[in-house]
Each structure stands twice: as C-alpha cells, then as structure tokens.
Length: 136
Image (cartoon, rainbow, N blue to C red; front, top):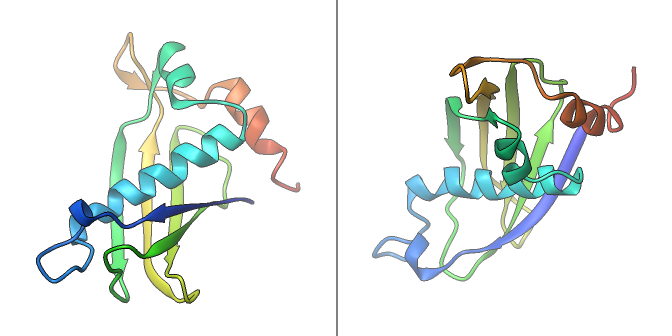
C-alpha cells in the first residue's frame, strides 16, 4: 500500500463568505496530494505526459464530514491500496490541525495514450516505482 502525506494551507481564495472552504476546492487538494505522491516515487506528472501518457479523471466521489476554515493547515493523506493497471483509483483523506478527519474522497484516473486517445496500461517505470510499496 502506498500512503503519502502533504500539508496544504487554506488560503482566502479557497473560502466562501463565511471563511469555510468552498466545497469545489477539495478536488484541487486531492490533486495536490496525488501530485506530491507521484513526485515522492521519483516521477513527475510532466514526465508522464512527456512520455505520451495522459491521466484524465474517470470518476470522483467526495464526502464532507466537517468544515475547514481560512488559514487552517490541512494534512492531505493520499492512499493507493491496489496496483493500477489501466484505471488508477486513488483515495484521499483530509485532516484538520486537530487531527480530525474532515473529508474523504476517491478519484479514479485512467491511463490514456495521447497518440491514440485510447486507454492503455500503466507505464512500466511508474508500475515498478509503485510496486516497492506493496507486499505480495
């Protein structure tokens, strides 16, 4: 299982008039978490795209448990519990400064060949980097 954590500060632009994080901002926090997770593997999104592979979103599920507020320091925990093949499910948990779980979600990405615009398998280098975090 691959678990990565990164912290995100809630900026004023992320909030509504009441200082609460706007519900539409959470997918951006998920993306920050998964971008940093991929970077921790020694790969970047840019390298993946430059190799001709795209990762469009297939689906998104979000559960809002508690509010986050302006200037909070949130912990974004990104979890991959199954090795991807073509679809790439990524779970996210967001915790507030008190360690309370405030949001959960799952984004399913799909590996796409940019030349054929068709689904494809995970690139070998990416798969090998991920395998180091799984026991078989």
